[in-house]
Length: 452
Image (cartoon, rainbow, N blue to C red; front, side):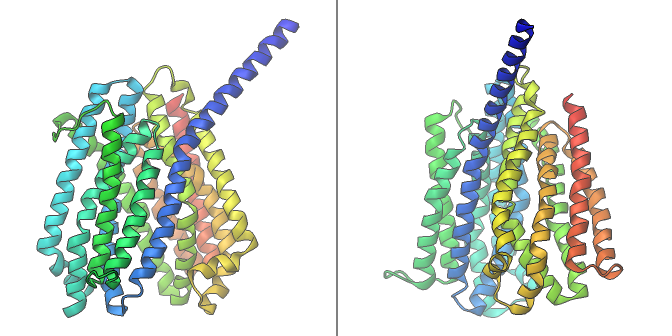
C-alpha cells in the first residue's frame, strides 16, 4: 500500500512539473506578444490623433492609402505564418541546415514581394486610387504621395514578421518586444515633427506620417538584424530554394485564403447585411467590433505561442506527448487573461464604449450589447487556438474548407437574425457565438484525432 501511494505521489509530482513547464513556455512566448500588441494599440491611437488633426482632406487621403496598405500587409503577412510552421518543424527535428534554407528563402521572397508591391504602387497607385475611391486633385495627390512612401512599409513589415516568428521559435520573444518598444516612439516623434512641421522641419502633412511609419520600421528591423547577428547560428544569403519555395507556397495559399475569408469577406458581408437594415445599427456594430479587436489581441498572442510550440513538439519524438497539452493550457490561460479585462467592460460598459465614440444615439444602442458580444468571444478562443494548432501540423487546407463552409452558414444565420427574427445586434452576436462554438468543436475533435 505504501509503495502504491509512493508511486501515485511521484506521478502527481511529475505531472505537475510537466504542466508548470508547459504553462511557463506558453507564457514566455505569449506575454511579450500581448505587451507588444498593447504598445502598438496605444501608439496607433496616438498616431491617429496626429493624422486626424491635419484637416478633412488630409485625413481622408491618409486613411484611404493606409487602409490599402494595411489590407495588403495583412494578407501577405500569411507568409510569416507559413515560415513559422515550416521553421518550427526544423527546430523540432533539430535540423539546422533545413532551418537555414527556410529562413533564407522566406526572407528573400519577402524582399522580392515587397519590392514588387512598391513598384506597383508607384506605377499604378494613382490610377488605382482614382478608380476605386473616385478621389481627384489635391486629395488624390496626397493619397498617392502617402501610398508611394508608406509602400516601403510592406517590404519592411514582411521581413519584421518573419524575424519575429524566427525569434519566437528560438524562444526569444522579448526581441520582438524590444524592437516594438524602440520603433513606436521613433514613429510617433517623426510623425509629430513632419506632419506639423515642428523644430524647423518642413510641414509635410500626410507624407510626413508615411516617413514616420517607414523610419519606425527601419529602427525595428535594425534591432532584429543586430539580435540575429549576435544570437543566430545561421547566416543570411539572398537565395530562394526551389523545394522550400514549393512548401511555402503550398502553405501560403490556404493560409491567405482563410485570412481573406475570415477577415475580409466575412467582415464585408456582415457589415453589408447590417448596414442595409440600419446605418445607425452598423455604426453601433462598428464601435463594438473595434472593442472586440482590441481585447482579442490576448487570444491571438496565445494562439501564436501555441502554434509555435505545437509545431516544434509535433516534429520531435521527445516532445510529441505535449501536443495535446499546449492548446489545452493555451485556451485556459487565454480565457483567464481575457476574463480579467472583460470584467472592466462588465462593470463600466458605457465608459468602454465612450472611448470609441461620444455619439449618444450609438452609445445608447452599444452599451446593452457590448458585454454580450464580448462574452461570445470566449467561444472564439478555443476556435482560434485549435485552428492554429491544426495549421501547424499540416491541416491548413482542412481548416480553410471548414471555415469557408461554416462562414457561409453563419452569414445566413446573421441575415435571418436581422431581417426575419428581428433580433438586432443581440441576434448577430448570438449567431457569431454559435459559429465559433461549432468551429471550435470541429477543430478540437480533428486535432485530438490527428495528434493521437
